[in-house]
Length: 498
Ligand code: AMP
Image 1 (cartoon, rainbow, N blue to C red):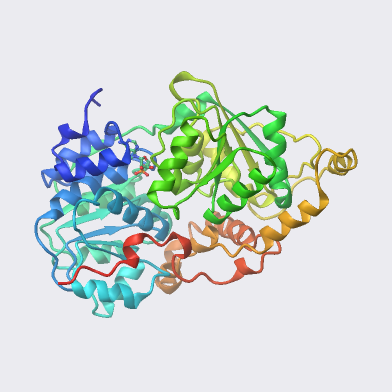
Image 2 (image 1 turned 30 degrees about the vertical axis):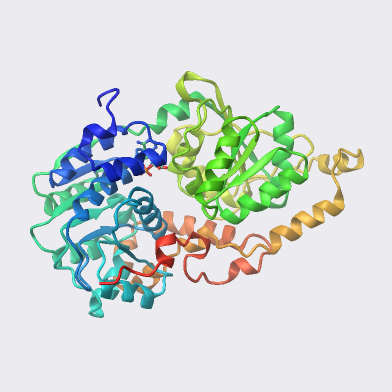
């Protein structure tokens, strides 16, 4: 990596450079520095990099320039990005929107939960960028709605996760349907032999780019604590930690956008100087909120992961995980927002018993258990292990009741109101969303392949569905239709007329 290298040294067009500037990026990350010039030369690239390294921009930025000349024909997309999950597909689509704002590329998403008809209409008019999960793409192909012989650029993202999810046979089938002469960009966080075999088969003379995870050092410079508490006491727990640990300013991460709103309101109601930041806000309000936080006019910024992406805030002393993230890499990413440049950072996570499997995988990634913290006046409970059984017994300190009696400011009617807020939440639940219909539809032919992964996946699914039920929240049991509040803007726009 060359220090001081700028985006303008990489050969990108003025339109893309302007969009990057608008996004507030100052310099390219190592994988961007290394990969972008090769992608622009239409070379194949084998990227060994994980989330958080800027890998998405390392292929989306040059692809925008490659695709900006030429035009898509009906049903014949010009580029294809295969991803294991619809969340990732949506994020990539958002990246294209952000970086491609000065270009006129059309996109379609073929993922479970999005209306097939809408997407078929877009495909009929011709799309430059097709982002798909393998199962849904094959469904469309088999119904004759799509032709893959004009694909000039293929991206396979998070190949190792595809392997974990049993998608490799589908990926191989899709690749066999593509033109032999094409550019292929292949990304994987790890390179087990099976992935190596695939990359050898799919790529021609690739430029290999391996970047060390940027995350680990951050994890080592941040003092981390984890409290295990009852689901219904999370907001109370957060307020107590803020006071107990004299936290003056922090980013507070929630897994769901809806919870960002609820928590933001709740904090303000309790007299904290808070604001929310999530993907549904328009760009102007996002920027304004961020500026106010940076200027110290807001002390607590409640944010979703997506909204927090690209946030460049120096000197953030504390990060809260109001929810334990489902993917351990997201944990590292979140806590990496503090403890930068040798400064001291602290990260507090609130876990509920059902989070056992997620905490376990974070601790495996960290290589260490996260030290536990007890919260004055609240009951400590135990995490459930992967099989859903709770180990040890809940320790009732009775402290909470004591706290209420002693008039610590806790108001029982407010308590009830807060609980009502939780139970009426009709937000889309990411844990449920993860159970992609893609998967369901194509389950049969995958079952044999998935046997090996079954036990660990089973644990995660169990935990997801327990978390998905969210206590007494009936609405969360509904099956998820569409992308809910995660619908990227371009899906709402009509496709470019042909
Ligand atoms: P990714 O590894 O693609 O998931 O990206 C991780 C995060 O880094 C995303 O939130 C991007 O918006 C952000 N990002 C990507 N490139 C840069 C850059 N050059 N400077 C600052 N942030 C970036």
